[in-house]
Image (cartoon, rainbow, N blue to C red; front, side, top):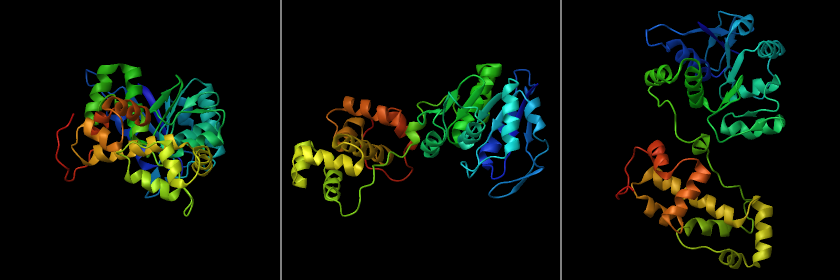
Length: 323
């Protein structure tokens, strides 16, 4: 059997811990045999989470004996991990053990030096923090998981499920992985990456700044054509001065701000209405449905139709046929 060691540290995220235990523990071959042996291990017999205490049956020696080690996230990901945990992970990696992290468990792998020189991902809210703390890592915030062979990382909690299914497929093939996906009531592969779940917030603007009324006007007139000359005129500045002030106060250009605002408007319309893509494009200020689809997929990571299927709200919607 393939032994999976799931590492429990203090302040472990319960969902990150439970996902590999359930997915690998319930996987089955065509003849009904269980291909995985799952062991929860920790440095101490008892481990705390935010809501309860976990009794771990195995110690850190289980990391060396495992074929695969899964590292769940902690509620305080940037807090220094226990040195004994880091040493055990390094020893396991040196021995050829496959090691994968779920969500912000990537911070533990990074602290152990296992991600240096590699691509990696983590929850999108923590990606910048990971990149700043560990500049030797190529952090990819837009993907669901990264497979470097021996070392793997995944994004937020649900992406940990994607990663587990990916590992099952690597170990025992697509048929076994597909059966595991059906047990979990999820697709074997999700379209797009983590970008579709990212809140594409607009950069903050200081209250009372010159730009505040201009940006409010943009939000109210997204459906119409807006030029740099229009915005500069509303601010009472020349186009050149307006562009410079805009970048100083927002960190981006007027055009990029406008495009982001239009994508956010489109996301809202896709979530809350039945309007077709042509109508959503027009209401958001895009020149054509084609231009809208291209920009939306570039920013969000999936097509407008796929986004609507995943994020459509369950409340009342305005009428209109879908495209």
